[in-house]
Image (cartoon, rainbow, N blue to C red; front, side):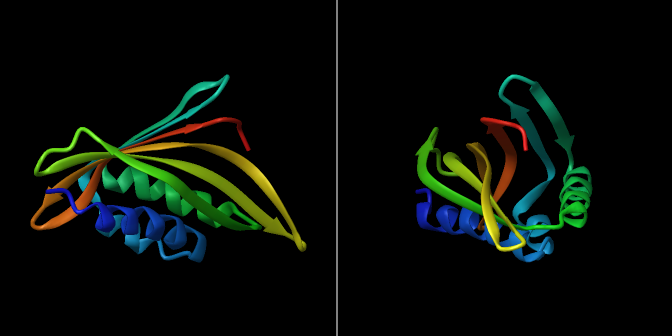
Amino acid sequence: MVDKQAIRDILGRLGWAYDSGNLDYFEAIYTKDARFTVTIAGMGQVGDYRSIENIMVLYRGSKASQTDQRRHVVSNIFFADETAATVTAVSYLTLLATKDGITKTLSAGVYTDKFVLLDGAWRIQHRDLNLDAPY
């Protein structure tokens, strides 16, 4: 049976980990052969990152280039395609940024995460992000 609370916890911690600069958490939660795809409305697919190494290059580069404080708010989580060892979690993203005391909504979107159970722990095998607008 899928431990939905554990997966909700992972999704929340991913947002917190990025925003606080704890990027090592990402390496621990993705599979080695993970894939991360990004699509932006009106632009199509803008990224297809394969392997944890390439995904980490993206995250570390993105984090290093930011001059604001990001907040990834994950909500409206539901589950599909459940088996004993896999599940798809769908959730909303609201991306906020604060700079010089002003908070703005940068974008919103939908995450679709395929989780697999490996050695007793849930890991992301494929994360797909569809953003409503570029930022």
